Length: 410
Image (cartoon, rainbow, N blue to C red; front, side, top):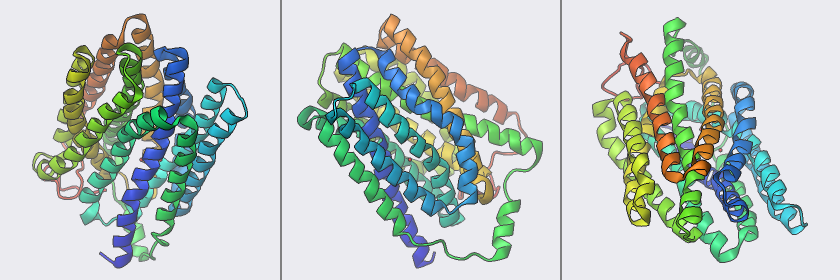
């Protein structure tokens, strides 16, 4: 590994964590404002839908942009645009704009920036991380992103309760600037031999069977995003709305989820290469689906350990699913693959959010969690059946024992 490669890998992990944390602090804090004002799951659901809908429409197009232009520059542009969107929310609130209008508008702008971030980050990783380092780096990357997503509720919950929303949103703008500085410090992409670039264009699954396999891997990876997003919408409704606890309690529960992801990173390094990424992904997602059913049934005391265990299983599954998808995409098309995956995830989020929100508001969160669990289990079962029927193994990330195939998300 060259010094430039090592520096890029060290800086991309904190940049990813900061970007994910900033994106989701904004979203969670906005959700808390709406819960206090409206006290319905549907009000929060519409916020997540307002964030997801434009991303679903724009992701395939932005995936192509990520394959055509310099990915480092695009990442920096995403962060700077997100910083402006974060600042717009406290400015609008201070100017006396209606809370719901400014919350939806600011988060819509943030969502557009996040849409480009997903394929850009995947593409930048593919071009800067060597194949032999991809398994280790992919685990670090996914944990950084998911830990930032889950810990956002902890940071956002405590900050909203102690300082109010306006200082939090202003601070959040600074996180995006910090991420942009990290990415700028990675330096320009080193020149690559022409024969390597041409080799990258030939690798990856080919033909109808390869495209079908990648399609099932996209579904497996995308449903993980649906789980996290809808879970983050259900959690404040359960804790703040139904259990009548403060936002600080919400922060503690999500901090446990973040701890579960850190444990998942260590466990994945031990079992991932032995079991194979496909088995890890399927088992982890199914375990998470089972635990979702029980999480709202035993109060705060039961919720905390269940969230910890579920996050550990989900974290391993998410890392493995991302590794499988990266393995299936050659460098010159990785932006398009992850753009389509992001579009599928967000379109699924809109549909599942509406279903879960309707069920929850007409009953309670127990049925909302159970509905999410059932949908997730089905989204895992379909790829499991389809992939197990194929004679050729699914491509694994570097170091996997289940497949010798070449390897190939703000």
